[in-house]
Amino acid sequence: MAGPRTPSLVADVHSARDAALKSIADSSDTAGLRKVAAELANKKSPLNAVRAQLGKVADAEEKKAVGRALSEASQAIEEALATAQAALEAAEFAAQVANEKMDLTEYLTESRRGTAHIVTQAMEHLEDVFVGLGFQVAEGPEVETDFYNFEALNMPASHPARSEFDTMFIEPHSPNHQPNTVLLRTHTSPVQIRVMQSWKPPIYAIMPGRVFRRDTPDATHMPVFHQIEGLVVDKGITFAHLAGIIEAFTKAFFGSDFTSRLRPSFFPFTEPSAEFDIRRANGSWIELGGCGMVHPNVLRAGGIDPEEYTGFAFGFGIDRMAKERHAVDDIREMYTNDLRFLRQFT
Ligand code: PHE
Image 1: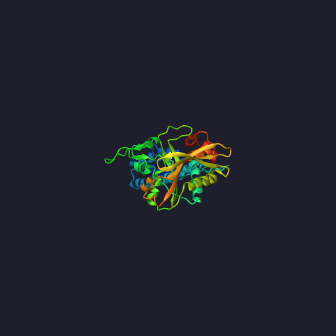
Image 2: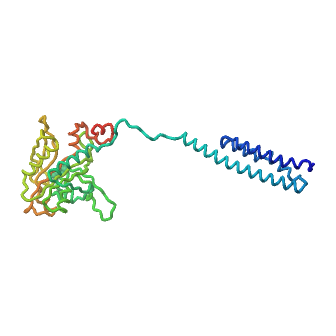
Image 3: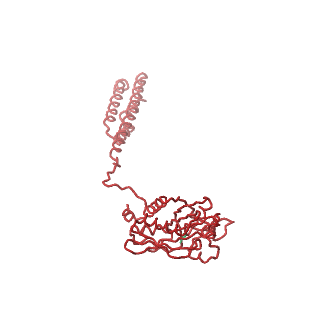
């Protein structure tokens, strides 16, 4: 049996190999190729069937020839499988990329550039006006000490004016910390002291910034709001200079149909003190802030000799001015971060 069968065994290997290469070439995707590979690995595949008969080949030469044919066929099939696998994988990946491609370009019909918040706009406008009047801008920390917020401003411990400020104290976890000595500043006035300590007169400074009070939010109050402080220290400064600056500022900021007035008031850090109001074109008044001649004790706390220099200071709320300027009914609206509200003021 071995004699007449052996020549056709090499032929069987070749035809099995050709059939295998053809089904590999015919596979149109990796799933199909995986099926073909599984069939070729099956014990009953034509090539494996020949391999199973190899042991029965009696003729040594023939056995060698069939064995060589088998190993050449196996190698050719392995290579064809690997090449087809790589080609099909690449094609499938390219198809997936093309399929899942996203168009990330967007065509906007209207410009949507952001703008500064109305409080920031008011602050920048105020700075511009005062810089135009010859002032320089200074800033101080929002977390202050009792000394700068009260003591140096002529409000020693137990001064009754302190109770007008609903202060928020900070209690750092430090072994040396004295209770009720570190706080969120209740006004921008402490920056007056810091400026006096670090600049030499003549001083013409404005100091904008955030301030904090234990206030319940309502239509006209927020526990966090913004003030701008003014300080002038020079030789021969009088109350008339203060009134003149307030009037010049009012006209520059609100318009020439606005005027200002000063009403007697009290602040521990100014003497005499006044509230200042502005008058709208329609004749109604708005209360804006406080001002006065810098108290000699305050000049001394800032390291300035009150015999040689005099000065005035003022401070007012910025949020209220932004509210007034844009006719906002409820100040809380300004801080809800609702873009529909904020975009009205671009
Ligand atoms: N710091 C005062 C306040 O917050 C305002 C003020 C500033 C008054 C400067 C006089 C001088 O109410």
